[in-house]
Image 1 (cartoon, rainbow, N blue to C red):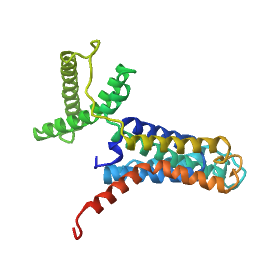
Image 2 (cartoon, helix red, strand yellow):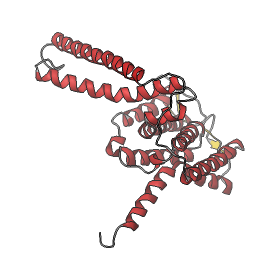
Image 3 (cartoon, rainbow, N blue to C red):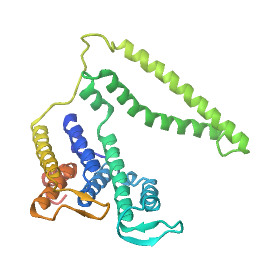
Image 4 (cartoon, rainbow, N blue to C red):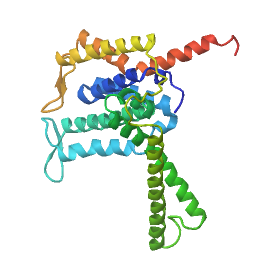
Length: 295
């Protein structure tokens, strides 16, 4: 993960931000809100992960979701054509399919940012005293998946050097080599689990009165960010409850009347979703000003 100023905020601020960003993205149906959320999620993911943000499965998933809806849903009053099956192809079903596809991609992108920012130690810090067992399981799962993937690749590379790769020999031999790699991987995982359990036991995990070291401190900037998120989130939720962000695709396309209050809500929602990008840009500007002239 690239250096990110927002990741340095208190874990409670980061968690509250992602709860608002992901929750609003899933609840708000207005296309403008979805477009703003998608742009901020993609921008933040690129700032965190670079080219890895453009995952290979996102575009096929986008196309499949967008195409599938008008093929199976025929609701809507604006008929454009008729399918070979005789069912109507409506404008509303096409637009809803595009909206649903972008919603799915937006939520996936937000969760990728969440996974990059909210490390296992942050989850343990936030939930360790409230739900210690669940926080431990979540932190171990988040840590285990990338380790499992890296170990599987290392085992496969070692076996390939011995002529036992999954691309060597006949189909039967490839399957046999694959089972061998899987067997080695499972054995490694079980041994690693035993070592982890012994290490936790020796460090006194689960004993009453056991303390834990933490590097996180709630500072003034964290308080300001939390108040900002609470204010923006509260205004967006209030506007949505008043129907200012209402939008529907069926039976016909329509929504709340366009007005100044709605424009203000769009600006507030954009500020909410773009907080990490603003924090990153602010830090970059401060560093630029701190550098000597001519560097």
